[in-house]
Image (cartoon, rainbow, N blue to C red; front, side):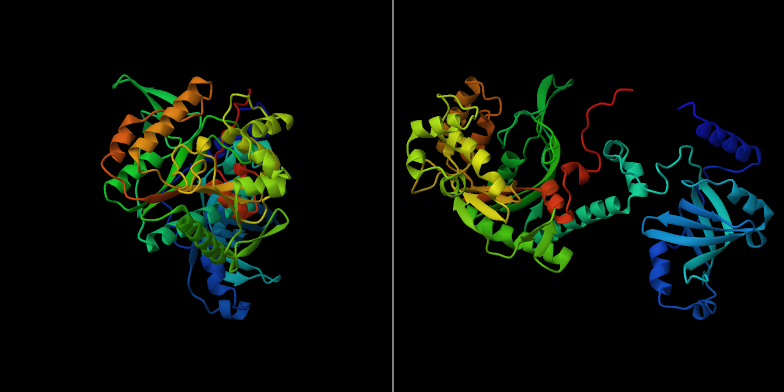
Length: 493
């Protein structure tokens, strides 16, 4: 603890309270009301009508402000539902408890009880006749009148952010509601929520660098899940034809305003469906959530109006590069020209790299940030889609889409490979990429291939980034604003 004058005085006050026999941390308060319940119940009543109410109310919360008028003081209490004023008078609570109140600080947790009245300024107020200290705060709140504005402190000490910034609480309350709405939507459509392992013997289901750990008792290395895909498709094979999981995934990659190494995904699989069916389902889901939150499919994100009204545009990777990237169609028709084009743009592409990888590098550089309104980008190259079904008419691409909103990928989906021979060939292709130095390429998974050999029905699957979706729907600029405890570099003491 810092050797500061303020903290020294706090410690002296605490010792004084202890010496007077005050329990600083009791746990027997009977809290029966909340700020919001009182305000909602009596907001329409004037002072005369409140005077007829004989009920006594008991609330508890953090002391956020004090206005001292000598023998009486107004105080603001904040609980989980909001703020409420209380009036504490010496003649009402007595010398002992008024003396206690005078030694309280902003930040302490207190209990007050009494009847409700309106002040001269028409403020709904608890006329306190009982006061208790429930938890003594040792450290002061930051910038107590102005809230917490330092970004670094907001993320490192989220508890302070939640105490002093009501908007932060609103964001995370909305996040919880969004996840609830997703569950309602999926369950209405007969999807079963399941759980799959977070520690896996092989890092599968996506092209990403994993985190590695070791299990001492088994003497085995495990990987933190980069995706639940292969396990969920095992369940489809086993007869759970519609499954979903709201899961934590872990990818050992960079941190940015749209990337956190630990993130939340909705991943779901539907038998006897195609990637086109999932486009319609995604439109319906996003429209449902927005209308529940805003009573409209339209909302603003960082000053731009986004319209989720279906249907949304659909464009292939190739045509998107032609339309938005202004790359000639004949360039994309020649593998050597694709590689040369990517290298001319300054992209990190070797001449030995697959044309599909070069095409996606061009797409990311030239197209992504131009896709503002919801857009389905389809037909991804087979080289970057190791688990997606080849298109029947154009086997060099896959039946896959990614959803882009405000220039960022929000969802990834495809018709699944259920041919074990094709899947083995894709894994072999990925192994060659790993041998060439791509540490994000997919590993061979013999156990999963064996699963497919028992027969998986034709299936489509999708992953939706919950954090990114919440960013959009809460008008948040950074993924750290929608993750309660984002990963941060260690702070040097």
